[in-house]
Amino acid sequence: MKYISFAIPCYNSEAYMEKAINSILVGGEDVEIIVVNDGSKDGSGKICDQLAAKDTRIKVIHKTNGGICSARNAGLKEAAGEYIAFCDNDDIYLPGLLEDNYALAKKYDADVVRYSRSYRTVKDGKVIAEEKTSFKAGVYSSSQFAANFDQINKAGEGIWAGIYRRAFLQKNQIDFDETMKFGYEDLDFITKIYLCSPSVVLNPKTYYVDHAICTQYKRKDRH
Image (cartoon, rainbow, N blue to C red; front, top):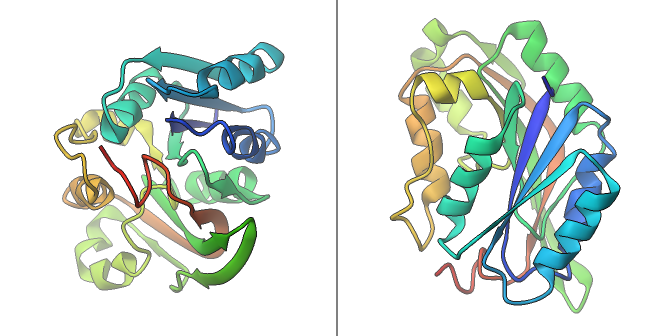
């Protein structure tokens, strides 16, 4: 079994996909990347197939356009890793993500490990602003979840800033609501998880870079 499966929904992102995928591949051999080409109209699908042909850690699913929740669910169903993580098609992971957070997950037998993310505003290829989520390190068992929810919630609701035990999601039948087309699907997904009182580790180190670049799956057009 792979340590972590990374699900990446892909739509018209030929300019970004390779960089996003490569940022995960440096994590080691015990990963799998599931790229879900959600009916892209540009060369994204071809690029994904070319990358998969060079590296067996990459799997590509081609499907008709159904939106980001549909694409993430397709990746979730295909995943074989002990934990699963989600990456948007124009963002990147930073070094240490796999080793550090999987080690924490195993050490504390955690259902969820949350880490910090950096939010960068990019204009004409240059970073013009950057901010980071901020919270304290912590380890909370399922029985401690409710009493410490305020602290846990400071880690935010972005689903890409964490890894999730796949068996926990399956047991509680947690997936993405495919009727949600215009945002807040992250909040819906993380709320479903939190309603089941998971064991949680908070790691305040930054491992994910969220780029403010408009794509169909970002801020301009969520279809």
